[in-house]
Image (tube, rainbow, N blue to C red; front, side):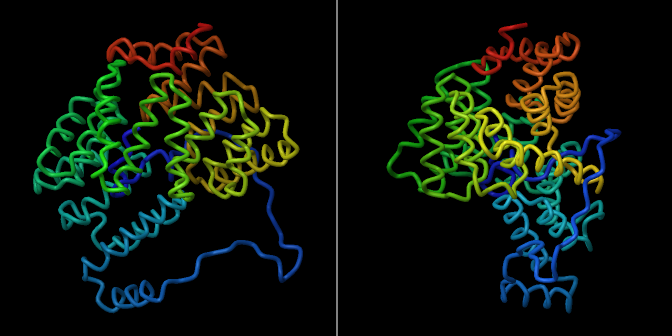
Length: 388
């Protein structure tokens, strides 16, 4: 996990995803409210200050600094709520400058952030490379570029950006940027360095919690699921709205053969797609009383997204297809399409598990080649390949 540049210090594993074209999905059932008083959806109250700022922007649409501030707030909402609609709103706010080849630098950064969140990594990389050429001391640009480069397996470029942060950012940020790259081959030293940095009593509390997410991922890579669970629980105790930590902890609980606990952890958070899919998987594995309802809800959500030509995370859909539907071949197709877009450890583990279950050696080969080339050492990946 190297999601630190997605929105400030936010992770990039949640939020919007990538629609897989040419997939036929049964049309979703239309919903008709049973009464005029039926609640269709609940929306947050409008912030009076934001309303005033939007009115000011409408009156003076060339005020780029105001558009940037409003777009940045919507990107943060997209992260915290795991709702990609806010990314669309942010893009609309920046619409006056969105397609310019040379937009203002702050717009360029937000455009790249939105592109990255929508998994348009090539476009994000072009914008970030251009921005860094214009502003070589832009720490956020380097951080986001490190994310994009890591997700696309361009580890040399990721390391270059992490190194550039050494004189631009807090040392903990630099350590958390470098640690996943240094630890990919199983080297224990990066984990220990980051562990010490997180434990430093002088560390800013918000930075510590953020870095603990990366430390938890490294613990998972080492096979220390218990340590990862402890770190993720600490994050959730401080910030119950951290969607990434909740999803990651649910995954750990399932790996620890406690799907009932994973389902309970996710209960009440089903409005977020990547938490609904995990709860459906966990409740199904636990043979819980809500399994049928949750599985149907996930099938409906997939169908609704396809009908709208919307984007749904192929990683999560592949997980669901493998764990609940038991369709290893379709899960392999989804996981392979996802691998073509992004190449994180979670993507490698999923493709390995699906392709192994399907007995599809050809689909497995890209992960094996990637693992050989980069001398990858990962406990979950190794388990996924055990039955090969």
